[in-house]
Each structure stands twice: as structure tokens, then as C-alpha cells.
Image 1 (cartoon, rainbow, N blue to C red):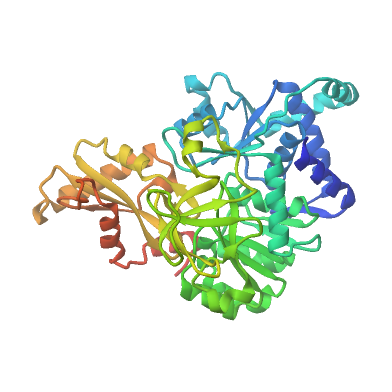
Image 2 (cartoon, helix red, strand yellow; image 1 turned 45 degrees about the horizontal axis):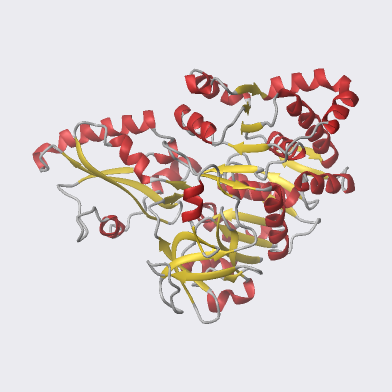
Length: 527
């Protein structure tokens, strides 16, 4: 049953003349969005049996219409990050059995590169313009095509959307979710943040990110207005909130850090804001306290993962006393803290956060062993470290998994290490994430070269760094490229003889640099 589309269609018919989407100052009604969904659903159903559709889109109308059209015909959608390299894109599509790729014209060059790879031969590539042209040809035969569609028995896959883990140059980690789960997750957000059809919701996250998906479905299934930012800057965010009277915002923490001063200075212009929710990575306690005290609206912090949705919520009423936590478990969610042997730990003891939730994902697509190993007695093993208080409030401590989260995107160090280690002058390399208030973490590459490490070799090391940056620029996506390179004579080891990333992170975190200051200055034209 196409529960997601049916919910949207019922909403669209109730609010048909209401603005559904505002993007680039263009407004689209629910009626217009529904019509486009139905047209594209019909076209997609004629292209190939059981479509599995990846799309490279940034225009909000295209993204919404495609995802809902795919839901209408019980197909599968795989939103894709256009910043990935051609090899990464095709590897991801292969791993999820994509048979159609739909793209906007600005990504034509990237798609042409993908088409040149021999392992993309089984994929049908269509630009948005080509999709529209095919739709126009089909429309005169609407009645017969609809009858044909209804008379066929089309198997309903349990997977609706597959979110590819970010930044993998090898085998991706495809997180599969059903339509029922996506609808239930939207309903959870309505309840947690008191969202109703009078709200205007801002989305400044891309659809290939699970937060971006939530920020599309939450308003469009409820009858709200979605205000979409294709590219985030503090100025665009502030103007969008002020001009369109945005009332609810769910934001990655890096956006809030970029907005920190503006939120305080422009408080009078942001009177429409009723609720701000921070997602993707915890914000530091001092900043959190400032937001609670200075911004004239409710502020929530949450903890969760794509696999389990929102697991905890810190309500405004608990903020002053519990500001060091990420809140208490959401309704029907249970959290345990486990030791290395997966045994439950007592309160106030740090261990791995494990979550049991009715909003759990379907599993990692075609990776049964990985899926099974990610659970213990029905609890999902998050790979994050934390501790629970007597009253159930969760404190997030850090990550157990070797993953860097920068700007809300998961980045796998092994992929970067493999790429850079191909340089003949590199003996060892360890890629780490160090704390950064803007991005959450930034990437550093700590290298042990075969070159002797002393001051006389300084120029050679500078040349080596340039060569390593060229390798990264050629083989890695922009968000995977190290911000800085450091050279050491050796890397610290654990007692078992393995490289100790914990010690390396401690060493470089102690430098206490404002790592992303130059990046912020470039992105936001700061003086």
C-alpha cells in the first residue's frame, strides 16, 4: 500500500490552493505538486519494470515530485549526492541495483562521466527535460495507461528509500526505509515539535541526507508550507525566515554555529520562529545555554541516527537543568548502554548507546550479515558512546565507530587513507576528525613519510603536501578532502601494536585551533 503517497494526496486535496513549496522565490501549490507527481508516476511506470530510481536534483519541486511519484508506483528511490566522484556514484548505484537515473541539467557533465563507465550500461539516464518530454507524449493516453497500470499485479517492495552512507569509495552502506517508516517518522516530528498545518518549515539540508528527507516529508504530508534553500548561507537563511515567516526549523549544528551571532543580532526580525531543533551532532554546552537564554523561541536538541530516527528529545522545559544532555527517550523508544561484551551497564557509566525503536530501518540493502551484526536483542548498536542518568536523560560522549561527521555528513577515514597512501612517499597515514564548532569536526591527515623528518626537508614536505592535495582533489569528493596535512616521524600505537587514533586525536585537539575559520570567511564573505 502506497501509504506515503496516499497521505500526501489526501493532504493535497484538502489544501489544493495553498502554497506547498517556496524555493528561489518561486511558489508551487499543493494542486500543482500533486498533478506533477501523478504525471511523473505514470511516465516512470512505463519506462521499466520495477523502477529503482536514483536522482541528482537540487530544485525542490523536482525532488518532491520525483520522490512522491516513486512512492505512488511502489518503486524505490535512491537520492544521490552529486558531489561524489563518478566512480563513487556508479558504485553506489550498482550496490542498490539502480536502473534509472534522473538528473538536472547542471549535473549533465557529471552524468556523462558516469555513462562512460562500462558498469553503468544497465542504467537508463534521463534529464528532467527528457522526463518532461516523455510525460507530454504519454498524457493523451492517460486513461488507457492508468487502466493498464491498475490491471497489472506489481509486487510491492518493502524498501521505499535507500540513503547511501556518505563518502564511501568502496562498498557503500545503503540504509533502507519503508514508506510506513517514513510516514511514522514524520508523525513523530509533528508530535515532538508541535507541528500543525499553520506552520511554515525551513529546509536547508540536501535530500540525499536523511534530515533533508525528513524536512520534505514533515511539512508536505501535514499541509504546511515548505521553504527550501538550495544552498545554505547565514544571509539566505535569515532572509528566508524573515520573508516567509518561517515558524519551525530543524537544523544541523554546523548551520546553527554559522548563525550564532546573527540569531542574537537579528532577533527582532525572527519573531515568526516558534521552534528550533538541532540535529546531526551535539552542540557545545555553552552555545546551547546561550541559545536557550537569548533566542525567543522553543529550542530542542535531539539524538538519533538514520537507522533509528529520533531517539531522544530535550524539551525546552528541561533545558536549564539538563542542558548537558541530549534529552530523554522519545515515546516508545528504549535505550540501553552496553559494554564491550554487549552487556548492560549501570547508570552513569559510559558505554555504547543501543536503541530499540518502532521506527527502525529495514536493514542495510543486500547486506544481511552487516544488518544482523548491528543488533543485539532487538537493540540497534549505534557505535556512539554515552551514559544514562537515573531519570533516563542521555548524555552523548563521542563515537565508538571510526567515522568523522563534518557538517552532518558521515565520512569514512579508511577511504581517504587508501587514496592518499597510494603516493609512493607515504609510509603510514592516519586520517582523523578534530573538534570544530562550525562543522562539528574537520578532517586532518597525519602522515609518516619515507623522507627524513627534519627542518632541512621542510621544502620537500611542502612539495609532498601539494602532491597529496592533488591526489585528494582528483580521487575524493570535496567533503572527503583533508583540511590540513601534518607530518610526523611515527604514529602512536596501542598496546596491541595498532595505530592509536585516540591518542592522535587528543594530540591535535589540544592544538585548539579554529580550524574552519578560513573556510567560513570564504563561504560567507566574512571580513
